[in-house]
Image 1 (tube, rainbow, N blue to C red):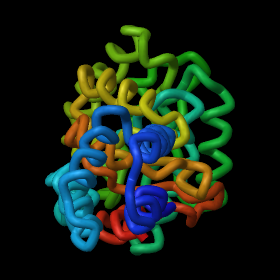
Image 2: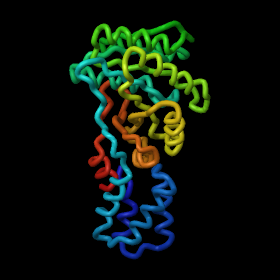
Image 3: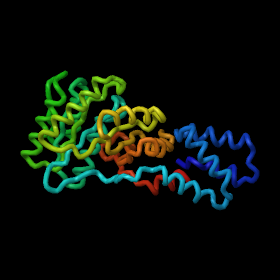
Image 4: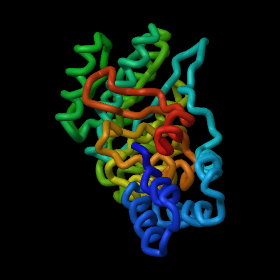
Length: 278
């Protein structure tokens, strides 16, 4: 990723002209860091000795990252319930399946709830994944009540003392208040049976600053506890994880790096920062 390679190359090359700074600034914005963050990095670079610049930027970037836990919630005495939210097209249903695969690799039992009832394709996709991963999935009728599906799944998970209940929710346009009301209803209904331990928002890393807008809209309706960044397989520009954490305070917990069931990685901040500075 080496987000700051151009900056370091220019500075180490000797005198840095005004046009050089402008070029560096543009490259940071193009890497989805955001205009304000890019300007701040430029100011740090201008004020710091060239020998100390890498450390100065590293420390600054580290301070931008969320201080909240990146560990997925878990409960040893009852079912841990996770809601997956996000706009359609971000990789939400695939991320749900990847999370199931991750949990199964840790020998956890999982029950799935296909609460995206307005998209038959999403339910079918989740059923296919469930079959492949050998887990049960609770479904309902097409265009049925998502909260009803979630409630049935929560009741079943509690009765069977399943380790995790993962609820895949609808993701129609995040600007529609109806969707947000629906997510709130799903949460309220599930919490009659089990507490919601995590709400993971899936964001397509290639959408850049629009991902921050999406996160803020979802945060107004549900308490988002963590992020899953998808499409971080080389097509993403690198800076969005920094920008979205600084803007929202929500920690990235997982990154999706491909289309396979195992293509989900736990996000670890320090190697990510080192990769940007390499």
